[in-house]
Structures are given as structure tokens and as C-alpha cells.
Image (tube, rainbow, N blue to C red):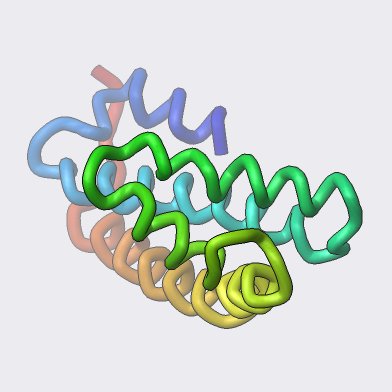
Length: 119
């Protein structure tokens, strides 16, 4: 994925008229990282527990809405069974569906606009 992003950047594939294709590619990269984050917690050992605690604590630094985001991610004030259930649901149902839709859009846009050539 990193090599693909590098090639697209070097060939100018993010420039007009392919900006939205680039955006969908960035969304796919974010979804890939999200799979890693949610999957890391599924064994529910000490490493997974503390990883979830740290990752879900990051939004707490956002003014006004941070605490609400943390509670929405965790499903409670603290990390527990609700958090594991949410991460499992995200990892097995939501993320695959969203990834499939974004991939379909990404591929259709590439098909319509073509692949960018060399500079």
C-alpha cells in the first residue's frame, strides 16, 4: 500500500481530475489502520486492554466533544466488555462493509478516469 501511494504521488495521480480517487484511497488507508486497531484488541489480554485504553483515550484531548467521543467508543466511562463488543462489531461487520463500498467506488473511479501516466 505504501509503494502504491508513493507511485501515485510521483505520477501526479492525485491531481485534477483524480482528486476524489485520491481521497477514496486515503479513506482505504484509514480503514486499513482501523482494522489493525480493532483487531489488536480482540484477544483481550493485557496488551489488547491497554492498547484499547490508550487508543480510545486519545479523543479525550478534543475540546467540548472529546469526553462524549471517548464514551461512544468505549460504550461506557471505562474500558470493559462493552468496548470489546463494539470493537468486535466494528472489526467483523462495519469495517468490512465500509471497506468494500469504498473499494468499489475507488475502482469505478479508476475505471472511468483511467490510470494517470508519467509526468
